[in-house]
Amino acid sequence: MFDKGIYIRRRATLIERMASCAPEGKRGIAIFIGNADAPAQYRDNAYAFRQDSTWLYYFGIDLQGYAAIIDLDSAGQTIYADDVDIDDVIWSGPQPSVRSIAESVGVPCSAPAAAFDEAVRAAAAKGREVHFIPPSRYYNTLRLRNLSLDPSKSSLSLVKAIISMRLVKEDVEIEQMDDACDIGYRMHSLGRSLVKVGAREQDIAGAMDGYTIQKGWGVSFPTILTQHGETLHLHGHTGIVVPGRLMLIDAGAENNMHYPSDFTRTYPTGGKFTKKQRDIYEIVCRANEAAFSLTKPGVAYRDVHLAVEKILLEGLRDLGLVRGNLDDMVDCGICGMFMPHGLGHNIGLDVHDMEDLGENLVGYDPDQKRAPRMGLGSLRMARRLVPGNVISDEPGIYFIPALIGKWKEEGTGRDFVNYAALEDYYDFGGIRLEDDVLVTADGARRLGHERLPIFPDDVEAAMAAD
Image 1 (tube, one colour):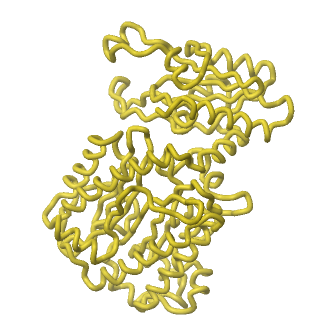
Image 2 (cartoon, helix red, strand yellow; image 1 turned 60 degrees about the vertical axis):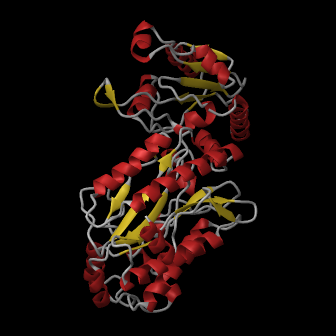
Image 3 (cartoon, helix red, strand yellow; image 1 turned 90 degrees about the horizontal axis):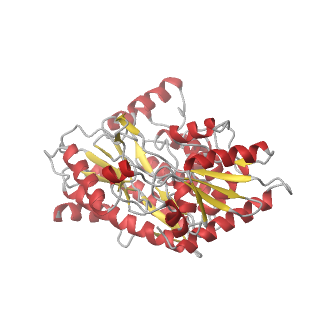
């Protein structure tokens, strides 16, 4: 938990921003519902508890069963939860009082959990607007329905106000993200050291995931570790490391303050790239470096994505896999066959920060629209960058036989794509290289105090030393 002054200031700023967009006299109340345990098989065997990120941002209390109301007219604030009873003490031990917990984050008033429902209903009965964010958990959805609130009708003004604040990271958040990236660096280094022919993927992933529990909250998302990198989100770890393949590892750590890292590296399973692997790898590496160099305030990340597409296509053209004018290929969306995803996403208290509030609201400026075509259409962060944004830089090249075959059958890109040459790449897999990047006042820096090896010679040297 941060110093309580940070939460006091954040809530005051939220009230100010809501006041600037609300009609006079119609501000109402903003309600916040923290998460509760989610049963895995039965009530007493629950998934690992993870608090709602918006709740953490404004209240910082990492306990279940909490809710809060901010009165947007009076600025009054109340936290609602129940003090523990003897059964709780027996099973979970003594806990501080709700009152003391509320005071620790600068909220002067507290009340029992049932009083939350009463207060919300009373406000609604008076015709006051009740602002809430889209629920991401079934528990929160039920809480809203029990209050006769339609979960699909969240408050756009509250969502926009929250996004405007959380998009720009404070210094204390950046410190936490550096810490998470340091854990992620060591997590990935451990994983790389275990990529040996004959090793089990499950052993590698298990060691990496276990390290994040030793040093923090755990993984920031389910680990992707696969010799089939052409499948973008392959979470199964059932294979044995075989020679001549590429091991793609996309994994991150969440620290104890719930800030994440998100790195991707791709390794030759035998410790040395083949010429074909190195040729493709170097293209992706150039794109990663170029994207970082272009990242600065005032630049739209959509334009960085398009610049990366051009770099990837230029490299593929040099290898004879595509042909034609680069601008024409970009305009026709040819890169989407090789990189079906966007260049990056926001990172914050969520590894895909705030996408529960609405992906387009978070990732796009009001004058931007999501493109319909493959690749660019999957870009989660297109906004004009400002200092304090934290984004991923993750270009990739993938050879997906089913997608290549579909495009070929449909005649898509027939003037640009050398389908005959691509047949030699059907068993290649995929390569992705990802760093976490902070936009600064005059450019950008990569988060974490050390960068994982990324240039091909450095990768091979690191694998030889492991």
